[in-house]
Image (cartoon, rainbow, N blue to C red; front, side, top):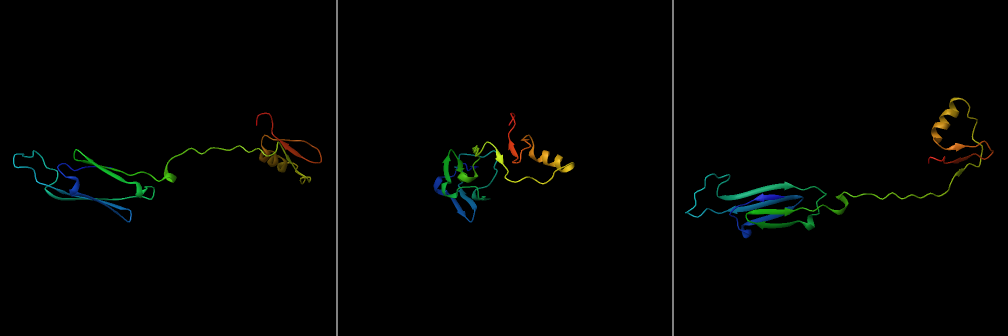
Length: 137
């Protein structure tokens, strides 16, 4: 987060974080007599802005830096909120599945739905039906 605070000294800026509400306050000092502003966005005096922070911000690691009238606040995300890739583990426990009992009579539409549920697995006609991957799996 970046805030423009020209002419403000670091000791005149306060940052406060309470109940997920970040408050930035500053005192803007008047310009020296020899300077005449062409345009003023805000007048001399008190400056305050508030921002509501979400749960994905690691509030204990927030840092602030003032350089050339620009206040930079770094709001790092908590580790659980950072995007990451999830590794897929391949655990092949058995080359095939063995059924110990005979399946119920599956004729007609029931056989078609069984074939659709099995997908690309092949079923042999023995007493113990085995499902095994086809060459494409």
